[in-house]
Length: 70
Image (tube, rainbow, N blue to C red; front, side, top):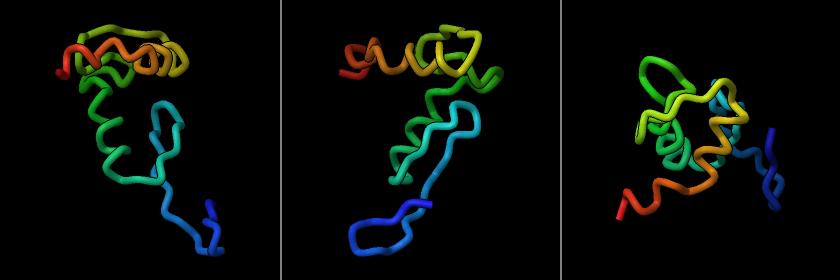
């Protein structure tokens, strides 16, 4: 449960694969699009396959796809 400065409970969106939490649904949706359709730890942008959520998160966090998006 996440509470903002005003004491209101905020919606939280959780990736069931990585266990990453998002407060913004759009960012959650973008994140979910990074996961492969056949394997949740296969990068949907480049096909890189990792063994676990830590390796997958590191792959995404390195920002290697920023150049591909421009």
